Image 1 (cartoon, rainbow, N blue to C red):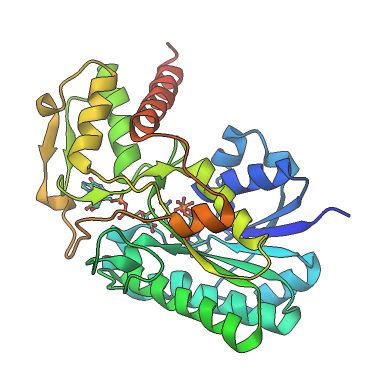
Image 2 (image 1 turned 180 degrees about the horizontal axis):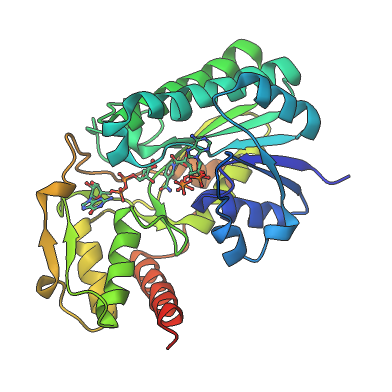
Length: 326
Ligand code: NDP
Ligand code: GDR
């Protein structure tokens, strides 16, 4: 019989790639979404897998709803990817972010404990938990220092995952993933904002790119490779937590420079630093040490920084051309 996986946040970047990956492994994939007046399945359509996934409404704020969904689906594995995932917005919506990004994970764990503690659980933890970094590079032993309501909520969810593993023996893993990007990245995140605007500038549809903190440094990887690590964590003999990262760090400015260079333009002619995009507190430097994942999971990143920027720029050039009917 096919194994069954339930993915919360199926409509997001990682949800779509993870669904595609699990389908390729022969899983029956259930994807949960929050009810809205319009359901956005753009990413599943982009990957051509909308019809292969069974969609199921699930509200992370409602424990009874989660319990009923688990009873109905009887999944072998649950991947909890749903979250208010945009750090900047979490400063304006700290409580809502805590409800979904923090307590949402606790409700999932509690529902698993009630319905079937044998269900394996993956929690989408984040390098944002390292925040004001206490050492460089960051690994599983680095102390956390969250710098936003988002990161604080993720930290709560992370420790709840560890706690349910230790207290109830649930096979619960926390993947501490560093930033990972792709053509399916949301437009509000800095990488997609850059590559999409570069494509629009190249086609004469925009003439500037307004960004915030250009000096912030991130460890950017390629999303389809990161979802493989999520699955690998749940296939190990014992549950554990893993950092997933490339081990390289680049500034926002370097990303912009590289993206403009892909289309033969100079970033300095278009980028405007705009304080409107500064955060009340930012994370200045992230760079991960994924040695544990390399040794125990056999996972390693394959796409380089330059390749990542180029593939995102090319995908956005094509999108913009299609939009203009060129
Ligand atoms: P996205 O923002 O692309 O997707 C988030 C998903 O969560 C969407 O399906 C969204 O649904 C859903 N969601 C948002 N709010 C709610 C809510 N109130 N109730 C139910 N569902 C909700 O994120 P990614 O795919 O990039 O990331 C996946 C997970 O991994 C997130 O938890 C994120 O915080 C975490 N993460 C991401 C990293 C990255 O670099 N991408 C790095 C580390 C962790 P809808 O489409 O309706 O908005
Ligand atoms: P991040 O991603 O906060 O790392 O969280 P984001 O792309 O939003 O910001 C990265 C850095 O770029 C700086 N920046 C800007 N950011 C945005 N969004 N827009 C701008 O115009 C801009 N200018 C500069 C930011 O200040 C920041 O320093 C992402 C999310 O996917 C989280 O859910 C995830 O947990 C972490 O990555 C790992």
